[in-house]
Length: 121
Image (cartoon, rainbow, N blue to C red; front, side, top):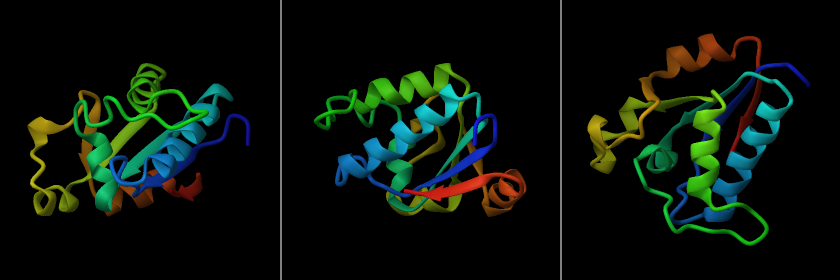
């Protein structure tokens, strides 16, 4: 899989399931280190991970702090998308999102993921 595209459909709410969130972010980091193009699509309760400072103070044993992993992913060029239909029901506004996260839809997920490996967390 080295150098291939990886799409992660990220549905884990880091506040309720930090271990699952840490797994998804760590897989994204590992894939990026292999020169893979990585896209994370935040959907369902996973959209909370796309909110600015939402993971400050969340730590999971054996993993780096989640906020630190998110910042590293953004610095390393991981493309982060949030599916906009899931924001309103969770009272999240566009201005609440982290810098670097873009609004997207299922159409973009399909277009970006056509030739990529897909993983759901």
